[in-house]
Image 1 (cartoon, rainbow, N blue to C red):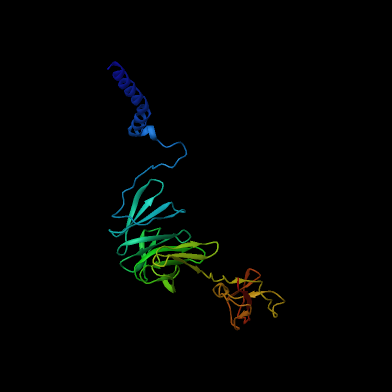
Image 2 (cartoon, rainbow, N blue to C red):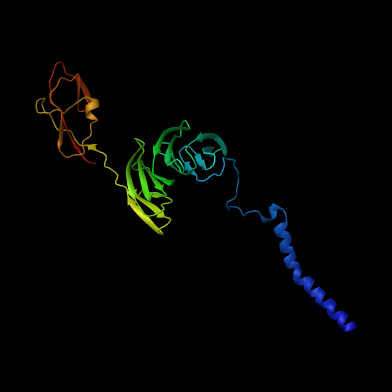
Length: 280
């Protein structure tokens, strides 16, 4: 009997000894937050910001340090100041917004409205909708190419991508892709757009052809003014021609002509000014 009791006591002691590390671990896990705080340098949550109902997407403008969050069920876009982590504006957009993209060069924000089949264009300076662009069926993903100022909108249920010109806020092309295009990503270095097709298990790759900017070359000399270069007035000088041919203006009386960058008066003169343009 004594031997059995001694054996039981020994087992109890051993069990308690083995359980101590486990108990200590549990206590540590359930203890104060400071016990399990992240190590220095690890990411931590520093703020929690209340926005609208069912926030769906997020994009930011690094130039203004503003963050844009579409609220799917509200439907609005919350504008957050990145310095104070507070909502500084709420912008009403189309029905069920989700996807959002920012062009930091133009300070324009593009929001895809799922049920409205449209894209809301927000001016980042005034936090107002300046245009609404009709798109395909159930637009979801949206991305911007800052090089071409074009916006790409994936229309989930029409199997295509709407290409929006950021200058005119008009759809300039509709590109057929796979079934169920969902998101969009742009590589501005290669001007390639990548669209995952949810129902096809594929990714469509679109090439964005960025039109060259006409660059004026050295103007041709006017033969009737001692070899000096004559240019038309500023309004005509800005005319661009994507061509290697001379761009000529017919003879006419100009109040002023630029002679190698200097404006001179031409009283009743009729000169023929030419300037050569080439594609950039």
